[in-house]
Amino acid sequence: MRRLRFVALLLVGACTLPAQRTPATTSIDSAARLRVATFNVSFYAGSPGALATALRHPDAKQRAVAAVIQRVRPDVLLLNEFDQEAGDAAAEQFLALLRSDQPGGKGIEYPHHFHAAVNTGMQSGLDLDGDGRRGGPGDAWGFGAYPGQYGMLVLSRFPIDAAALRSFRNFRWHDMPDALRPVRADGTGYYAESTWRQLRLSSKSHWDLPIDTPLGRLHVLAMHPTPPVFDGAEDRHGRRNHDEIRLFADYLDPARGAYLVDDQGRRGGIVDHASFVLLGDFNADPLDGESVPGTVQQLLDHPRIHARFVPRSAGAAEKSRTDGPPNDGHRGDPAEDTGDFLEPASGNLRIDYVLPSADFRIVDGGVFWPAPGSPDAALAGASDHHLVWLDLARLP
Image (cartoon, rainbow, N blue to C red; front, side, top):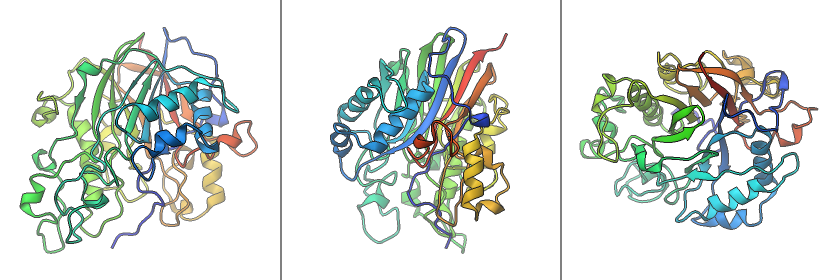
């Protein structure tokens, strides 16, 4: 049985700024550059509607998350683990919180936002977790106690073309050529054939969401693949994580992505000339952790992606040192970590990413992980993931 390495089911990355520099709180020149970020805020509740209720009277952690966003001031921001509820109650409450000054932050306005249904908590009617029963979090298309738990929310200063959305929430894992189907030790499939043919690949959803920015139309490719743990020798979650990430790698290649059919009935991948940025908590570190080897390299080595710039922080490097094992045995640069996980089998990892298309120039970037003693140190514990950001500009 593989070791369990996370305290919470879903991981989201933490990034900080080189030499523990905090991005300016004044707005950047949006005509010249665009600040894009991802942040796993762990805003999920125990029951439907509870997040909206909690945000009416936000606690210190929720205010700290708002303050982090106000300090970095992204133009476009993906939030992972933000419950998707009927109506916009939770989103509207959080937008109101962002508009008001928080300790350490100045109010910020996001005129446009987007959320939509996800697979978490949506019952499959099948016995996916193999416990002999149907129903419960483990038998949902994506692990969750109720529909929309651990959802995704996009905030933007610029107009979102929701009518042009492409999503892959309903795409079946079976329909991916050469999918990494989980198998038992005897070589038989972990899932019965009838189940395998129905199983959805995306644990939440995969979105291609166009936003019209001063730099032109930007396709926000948002996802939050399942963590590669909480399973057995069949590695069903590790394999799913690999293929969830592969979906967007194939989406960027017209030949490899020809098999894809989105929820809107359109076939194929993104057009060749489109500008994009991949965002999210991918739950896959390039060198450490328990993901299938080469999982995130499907994106980091992709010819259409600019991945040479790696966001860093002084806070991550210091936390790795003070936490000790198992970080001492990690192969990756600890300054590149984005998630702060104390459970002994895990350690800190780089799992959150902002990956732009190669037609952008990266002007700046970092991870908001303040080092002890820095002016923003009080905000370091806002989430076990840290906000990752990049400033993008057009190539000359």
